[in-house]
Image (cartoon, rainbow, N blue to C red; front, top):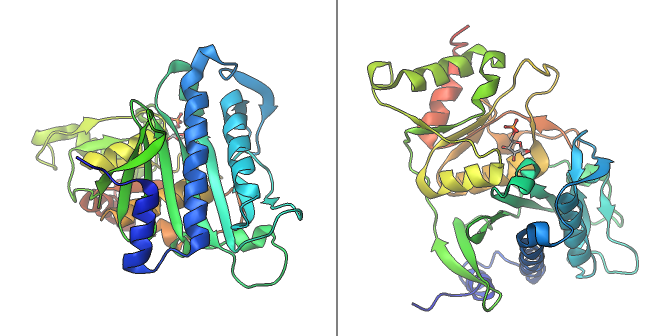
Length: 337
Ligand code: P6P
């Protein structure tokens, strides 16, 4: 079966929808090429000097793994010279990285978590890269952090790459979700799924159960009902999965349904959640919605949240529509309180 490449897919999308200006197409292809290079570094594992931690911690206060920095550098270097970007923002960088004056500046803003799931790197469990693309609003020369503070519904594109048994790139440009698998023999990204669709119902929830005693009552109630199984109010048994790599958990949900939750918990009550809005929740919410799913913070649509800070965190409930709506309802009704 002849599969089409990422390049052909983007050309055909432009022809059909006219929604992919040349600069956006270049951006996507450059990011895809960077993910290929990150995959090569990840796959080296212990054979390359890529495992373990650096002496640094990032703006999140987390220890920076060697591969976090490698992935960040690859994405910065790959995207600086193309003329498609004004600036970049990364989980690994305190402030934005403006395209140096020696290169032309474009109209797009690229945000990324260069290597999500870092705690899994050294134990050979799937990890990934998450990216989000915004347009620079206004054509004034120069760019600042404020240009990035747009709600997720403004995204021009979003995607992630899973470095797992397969290396898979998942992408949305606002016309559904497509998945490409890396053909290592030719180095090409080949279309392996067009039009991904998340089932509206599921029997599989994804949450870090060790935090159970710290959750708010609506989340306690929702999970307790799932655990009560067929003899409980849900009338069916549930399964649980938690990879602790958002990319891997979201990709499973995109592939077979499910609900992913990283809710607020009382361990750090001042934080709305653990995950970051701009380069984790927003791109994943865009992808999930484009695949017919739903993504909220337990109350409001993730993509409607107006950011105030580049690295702000958010509670995340995403996946099969009917389950996310049930969780929203429990929050609305103040259930379990
Ligand atoms: P925990 C990875 O560090 C991450 O940011 C997400 O990819 C993942 O869903 C979550 O944190 C895992 O958190 O508390 O279970 O280790």
